[in-house]
Amino acid sequence: MPAISLSNSIFRSFRRISPNQALNSHFGLKFALKCMFKYMENHHSNNSKSDSRGALIVLEGLDRCGKTSQTSRLVSFLEGLGHSVESWRFPDRTTGVGQMISSYLSNESQLDDRAIHLLFSANRWEKRSLMEDKLRSGTTLIVDRYSYSGVAFSSAKGLDIEWCKAPEIGLLAPDVVVYLEISPEKAAERGGYGAERYEKLEFQKKVAQSYNMLFDASWKIVDATLPIEDIEKRIREIVLDCLITCQKGKSLSQLWSC
Image: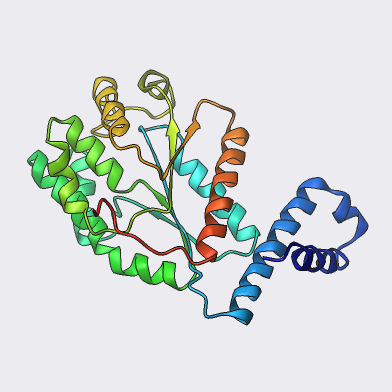
């Protein structure tokens, strides 16, 4: 991307806003980012057949680490920059499989550990084709929990970790995984803890150990005990870098494939 052309594009855009808006640092930065991404989209479409696509962003972590609130904040931020973006969450309790999972998590039914693991995996496979279509059409997906949660929670019950990963192979690999790191003890102090089946301190300690075995190059660790605004800022930085890479044509890949 020619730096001079990008600078000229942003300069022309700034001429359309008021002096007071331009002096507001938050507004000015947000406006500049929006101009930058718009320029990149036009540059790709005007100069080549682009493989530009949306990014698959996954937020992971222990229960009560703040994933859901940070997902909401991130979606609002990206929408403000003019991105096509959607918030997804697994398990998706709106599907047939998801309703069975919801009943289990609410302690309304009992299932074998292997059976519930396969149901969680099936719930993700239900959305696999739609996920790919969304990404290729340019929509960025912010996903609250994904395959890593399924493997971490099931292996924490004592199931073999490789067995747990097997049904997930072939699902789309995230472009980045944001792991909100918090100790199980700190998470247990947060409001609402204990409402669902897995929100038990000793079990969450095992989940944390399982997560540590899943870290790879796509993971970015963020301290979930920081002030909410600081966490949000760090996540934004990570995600904006990822979006640029995907808009340049990064290929989709499959999870845990050789």
